[in-house]
Image 1 (cartoon, rainbow, N blue to C red):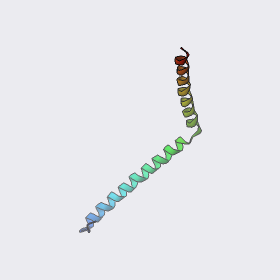
Image 2: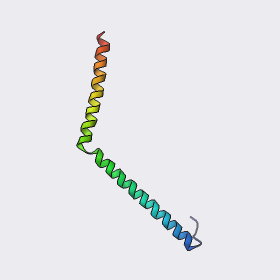
Image 3: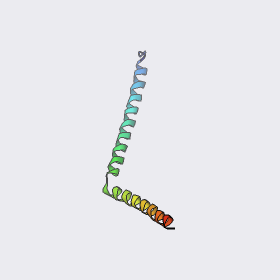
Image 4: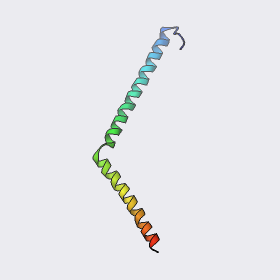
Length: 68
């Protein structure tokens, strides 16, 4: 790290650090909300139904193919 030569350099770095901190804070809040949504039971049910439908379809196709 190079030493500061003026107060303007210090102010610029402080502004940049504040902006970086604000961005990180907003990203953290977004991650928290996404995590909350993933834990909702309704999302679990829809995921389970999608998987069940997919595997049922595959099972029906296998039965049909190997029946011949």
